[in-house]
Picture 1 (cartoon, rainbow, N blue to C red):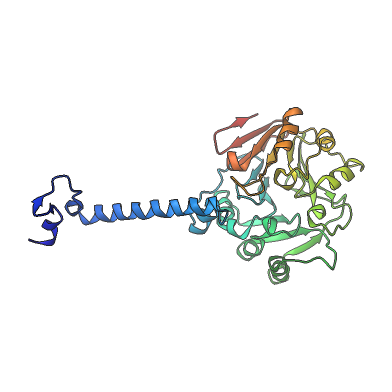
Picture 2 (tube, one colour; picture 1 turned 90 degrees about the horizontal axis):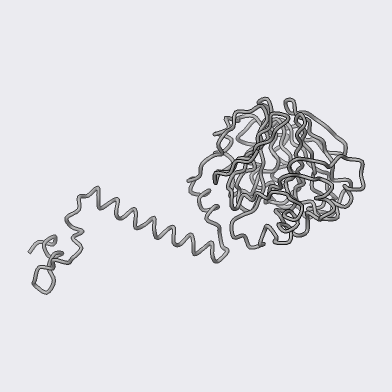
Length: 331
């Protein structure tokens, strides 16, 4: 009896209930095996995520199985990218580009795919709000791969313990002819027809979160506030300044942590929507439930990348529309 025939028999009798794998053609067998392997890989990935070893988002990035953001053809648009438990936003105004933070190194493929879908090869301004890897981990590779013309960074104290990624980034700036700008409160510049105003850091702080660059972007009669990981200490200080914090959209500080977004600050900003960049089922429990409750009590709509995916905002200078990957569209 040949091998293929033996597969159909059990104890010398024909097994009519046997799974006749041998009857499949070679192409079908390959498909079945590959499907089985993919199930194993996916299950293993879920196990690693549950053990907080690596997220499925990071696994997808490493494998390159991710999509870019959907481009919106308006003169002004903001893309808050779904980069897991990190941070990256892209602003396009009249074909000029501002990138705020660059996510972790694990999110590089997501950012590259989004730049590709947005047809971006030149980044006019890149802002690194502060030198934590979840905000600047991909900066070095982006500078190597794209035409980055200006990079804005805050001054840091000499005794700050800096990461390898930060030092690597600094070394690459002169080699790639990137103009490094040390920000100061009150500094302004333009991307297209939009004004960018620097509000913080108000002073050099050894706590890197509170040394975050805070900016307000103004396009026509619409405005957008970004605060990196700035916490309550900075929020209180900003309230005491002469800066106009009033903004339509607030990018919440520190991924929606309870260390930020105090009630007085939210009341000063008066946004109609708050954007939170955080990873699904992250170990920090971001966004914090107290923060979500504050937003709800003040009538501020909350959008989190962990739930909504990429979050896109478009403005015509008077009206703002929020568009999410999960199908929400609010004007």
